[in-house]
Length: 305
Image 1 (cartoon, rainbow, N blue to C red):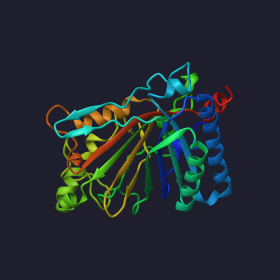
Image 2 (spheres, rainbow, N blue to C red):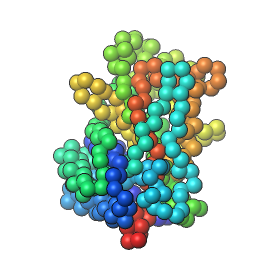
Image 3 (cartoon, helix red, strand yellow):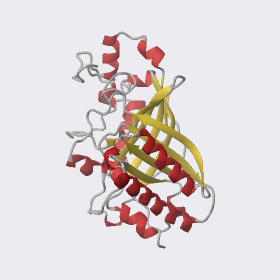
Image 4 (cartoon, rainbow, N blue to C red):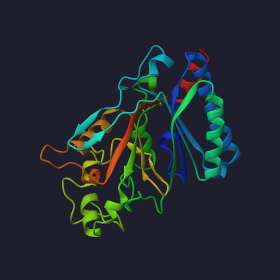
């Protein structure tokens, strides 16, 4: 199989830098060449600071793909799904490029980010920058384990990476990102039992809660299709925050764009019987964008055209 970008299936890190960018000039050839150089920046820091477990990922927005890479288009690359039901919504914030930098050292994430931004300075404008961090033993800021149902080992690659059956885009991955902002003051006003009912798992050991229901977060946001043992997408997001605002920067990687759309529909619209994801009463998405992360070989080959 064509080599995917290392950041797609990477194991969890302690720190992340997420960069959302728009391209501001028409020199697509220059941008293609610069993106290949971004891969070189990732490789340099991975080799220079091997103990930091550096990984990176470059993904191209659904609305920008044909401008950057004229010709073939990933089959399922479509704009971010715009969904809304009552007071629950998935707002869209289209961006041309998404760059994910992760490492076990915050200073290395910062150094790579600065280098990448300087390289792309003449061609892009920064739309948003988010610093993610590991919270306790891999929890969201609500106190519950995040993405505990993620596939493990080689299953991560099977779920997140397009196989050789799609030779044009083998090694690539469909990426969806959202920035959620939590209302932790309201969340913390709930009793522990009420929190476990909303999430559907116990807080301490992440076991199925006796209070689990069809509207519990673990049910509505599992990413599992009918008859599937593991989710059809890999969640790579991390908490972010300061003393003013806190939340989760959600990132999913998958071999198809359909699992994310199905999961989001399950959260917002529910099962048709009023059972939507109750966690959405305490957090709200403020951004949303769809991208495709091509294989390393694809990015390098296209940079020569």
